[in-house]
Length: 178
Image: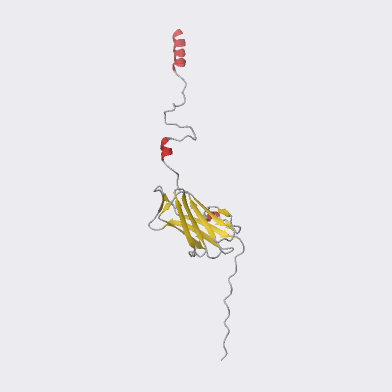
């Protein structure tokens, strides 16, 4: 009997409870950053789109897919696209609902903090009409950010609030009498 008691005592005392892994086991606490992550640099480029209000303020246009519906904006003649990183091999175009490129006077300001691309239209966007801002590669198949990472093409749909204007009927020609 003493052998059984000794064996049981040894089994209980000899097996320590499992403990949490040591700090050098590769596990980091939530929210802490490793040296490799700190050296990796900024994350991928992200975009924001704004339009100029009649009172000269700026209003954001939500970035949603076409399947999620088009956000409504007020009539405007100026759009501003911003990215968190500078872009290479890119082009920005505004299309109307017939997929025709809109005539505009564009300017781009690049800095280490990103890109500011301003689209100035000769006339305000038409009430009730749908538009899509497209950011894609100028040449080849992809554009890249300043870190050399590929940036996927983007389509940003939106619609101008208000009723769609009815087109003017063509003027009637007067018939000449002979």
